[in-house]
Image (cartoon, rainbow, N blue to C red):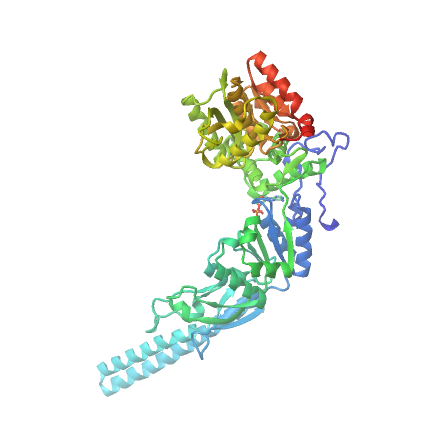
Length: 637
Ligand code: ADP
């Protein structure tokens, strides 16, 4: 809606708007950027989620948010709490029940009233105690006087002592009259926001503390041991639960009851504690629930709870990337200003520094003309860069600080991959020169954002019967499939029938965890053809790409990271699918290290990768005539 559109608050140079990395923003540093007051206006991208939050706040509906971590789910939930009316807020008091000590009474009053009530009770208790002490001392005085007159001093002291004890003991009963305020909204300036992510049952649903002294005048009255849960503290506000599926099923069921009833009695959660004997009257818990998680989380969530939220609310997906426009870039500059304001200690970013962050946002999107919306990570980069600047005591955070920060804020996978590359260099497992038959430098992605070189070796041997593909580990299936695809192609140009051979495929660094080998099928195919035809492969070439039965090279994920990995490993050329060309966003330092060769077809791949001119040329020529459209016409086999 238009009510949430934000003006960046600074001038824009419309002439250079389109080429400028800052979208034409006329600023010297982020100090010139105004940050909107309301959280909902600070949210960047996620227009749909934001509109839904605004709508749901008006209608008091629950919302389910599905998406990657760090895209603004909890930010939006918090923003929603700022949109809710503050007038509805309540204080909740728990009173001693004179009829049943284990069933404390619950009273709800408008916010701010609770403090007054407690004060009044305390004042009354104080007065009563004062009256009682006056009364006590009068009685003691009378006893003492009487004892002196009757010359029974000892008896008098004894009687006075007993009176004193009786008064002491019963005064606790008066203190017990003071209620326990479990929800205090007196000072609250917006509706409450409670993040119950990963909360245990007690923290979510409320609890009654254990009392080690259960009798004998030492006990704490049960109403004083009552503690509210997030569901009660978020009354009239927002309850946010991320990774909702990690709540155990019983807790999810209780949460559902709480949503249905709008109130939920508090009882001790651990069964053997004295708290478990106590159960209060129902305590209001009229919250708006925002449940979040990734797609898996939704599937593992209690179905009844999910349909409850869905039936009475909205479901919304969070975007991971957004189209790169001048307006968006201006917002990304504002994002940096927001993070600086939130942190409170980081030096403002210079223009250059902002540009570098925006470049990184482009790069991390892994998609042409897009920017990443994974803001938590991007915010991490901003903070690390700012911290470096702070350590150097400079007035501004500069581009150089951002570049340093990029080196430091590498993910665990990236660090692992780098470490791995180093170690392999030591052992000379890495080959990046010369020619070797049947060996290809493949590329894979580890984790989400780390490339790694994954060499593949193929060997062909006469079969012991029935031609098999022999591969090991988790990549076996992929190996079998790519050999199958390549054998359809081989049949067309070679006399060798692969079904009469055993093809051994070895992944040199097998055993590495978390390697996604799905995209290695041109690698396997190239290794097999090289082994079959005895033509060496240029080891300064690395490659990634998927192979179709027709010989087309199909697009794969993570090309940018893969190219960088190849460069780091010392390769000088890298083959990628032509259809991935637009996804390449490698950093400048790699641009001179490696030549990127986009290929459409396996014949082009072999043209680059194979060595030894005469055999290679004839092979590539034969392949060219039969793959692609030519192969298509004659059918794959
Ligand atoms: P999630 O709940 O989706 O894991 P958060 O809302 O906790 O992510 O985001 C973490 C931080 O990243 C936020 O506090 C905010 O600083 C920043 N952030 C996340 N998403 C956005 C967004 N869409 N716009 C602006 N800042 C964002």
